[in-house]
Image 1 (cartoon, rainbow, N blue to C red):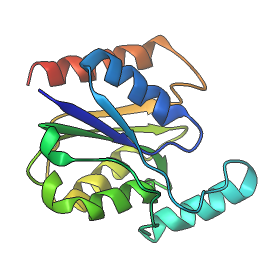
Image 2 (cartoon, one colour; image 1 turned 90 degrees about the horizontal axis):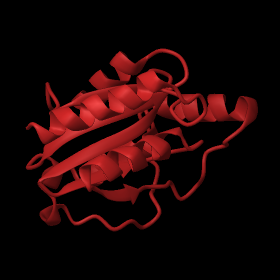
Image 3 (cartoon, one colour; image 1 turned 120 degrees about the vertical axis):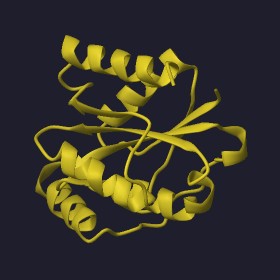
Length: 163
């Protein structure tokens, strides 16, 4: 099954997870970025990013290459901001809504604190679905490597391989 992993990563945790999942599944990685970057450090990071996520903003994205016809499954990856998905992923979904509705969809989120469940529910609502093929939440997989995250990634991939 041809799989694409479409993700946004501000500080590297989501890209770290995406790379590991892609390696295990043989998936293609597609990184998306907003035209105007979010602050990556300090107080502004939380204020600007959190406000943008809470308002369900859809920032303009830098050009990316995604041809949905080439994939059977799309895995979406995002950091959790204010118990929500990051706005660049919301933009990607809005831009590709019609073709995503025809694909098998799985998702993973990366976070430092709480809000994974709420973010996953908001992602499903954004997609217009009640369920995903598989879901994964990771606590700081790059910044704080731990065996539990490696096991969760392996279990997520195994669940998708079995589908």
